[in-house]
Length: 74
Image 1: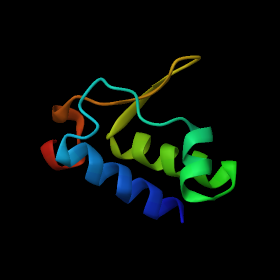
Image 2: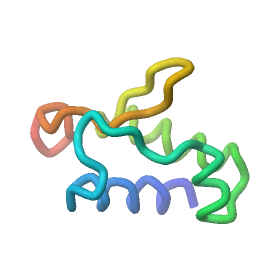
Image 3: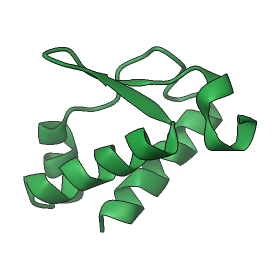
């Protein structure tokens, strides 16, 4: 399920719904939206971070990375 969450967020990044430097939904919002456990949402966010789609600022949230950081643009 965490892969589906990550794929959905990637689709929204590519479409421009989540533009670069904008915050993505919080873990709590993902838990509510997808009806999953917090750990599942956390794993989806971690996967996006590992792949270069997002970056996380402690106490602030996770944000869409600049396009040059995206896996397909490296």
